[in-house]
Image (cartoon, rainbow, N blue to C red; front, side):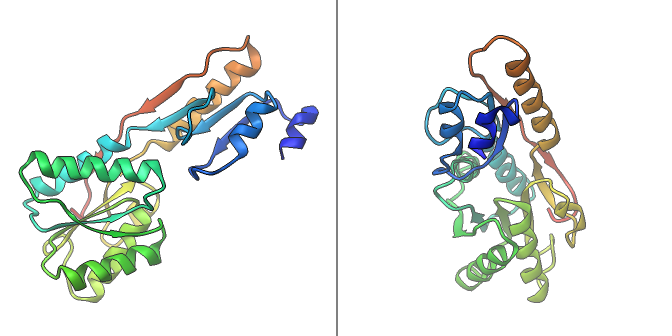
Length: 221
């Protein structure tokens, strides 16, 4: 693909990748191809990007579960090598700590429905009295809800569940998910504008645009 772009077949690149070891951004920069990333790169690089304040999103989720009266709280986290996942967990933990609450129980997932279900099964085995769960994305939250329903736990009466992203899954989940919204449409539009500025005008200094998350309250919490 980089060879294709080098040959002049494209004016620039919009890159959506959260893998910390992805070589593509550095390859595009080395080829002097106008580039905009979705999510800040793991390593400092002279490239424009859009991102979300993941820490603030995790904090919103924690504050909401506490406000609902949840006290035995657990997290289905993202893989620790992903910066966004680490920041979501850090924001959630800090929200609980500021309220004088003990740290949450944590089970790791990999952003899939099956991993969310497996993590929820583990959490209930080790902490059967859990009454609130924050999942680092909506798909894992959906897996958690499936397990809770199968075990006869009412959502949100017995266990409140909060996801992250506000993807299409959030509204089709049973029950519909309370979640932290990541405004991906607005972020994608900003990426396109930033790339167009690079392609149409003189070379500009790289910049980072960080969007704010929003809590969307539905039936799960």
